[in-house]
Image (tube, rainbow, N blue to C red; front, side, top):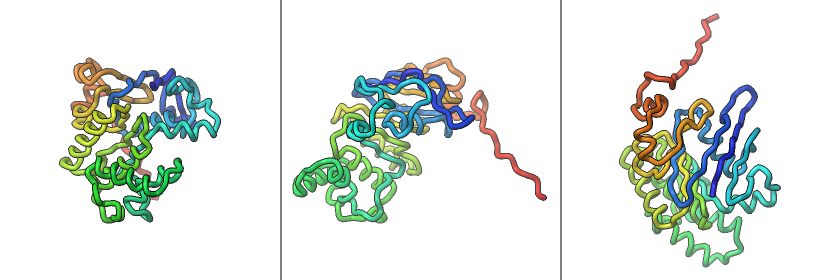
Amino acid sequence: MIEYRNVSKAFGDLVVLDDVSCVIPEGKITMIIGPSGTGKSIFIKLLVGLVKPDAGEVVVDGEVVSQMPSGELYEFRKKFGVLFQNGALFDSMTVGENVAFPLREHTDLPEEEIREIVAEKLAAVGMAHSDCRWPSELSGGQRNRVGLARAIALEPNIVVFDEPSSGLDPVTADSIDNLILEMQRRSKCTFIVVSHDIESTFKIADYIGMLWAGKLVAFGTKEEIRTMDNDVVQQFFNRSSEGPIQIVPPVCEPDA
């Protein structure tokens, strides 16, 4: 369903992705992991056509994303549901209005049917009867659940999660992991999760890809990655500051 073919992307002198190739299996959960600033977000933006590669191709269902005209790209994006960090809800809309938003934007369904779909999706993520609440009244975990309900409102084939457990306490993060597993098993959709949470990765992933220094240094099943003899991969999973991944401290200018 999804293939990255020798994809490269740079911003000026900053090379974000360098000759990245992989095939993301259909109907599975694939985790894209790596240290901060290694191109995970750009990896996703290339997939949905928000950014074009400098070289190579991203292919979805046989179509090259970067070659689509704007009209086709608009329709193409309906294949995707996206859960942004912290839910990214519209604070000026109620929970129900947030979930209904893509339905009102992209379909001609009558309001009665839209309300039924909203109720169904909110119930599926454990937020039944919360349609009249405001985002400001929700916890971080609840915002993510509502964000997921909105992401699946159009019954997408592919769901993308951008750091779904970021900023959440361990118990809430685990409940989000369980929800992702349950939703994927029920829908059989292709899920792509961007994360740097090691525990979450090994709990929910079927496949794992690791980005570092612009390269996809590893891609395989969870079992293959866990036992891989790769210094970068092992340092990341061992949470060690010793190894090829180095954190460069900021340069402090001397006082004038």
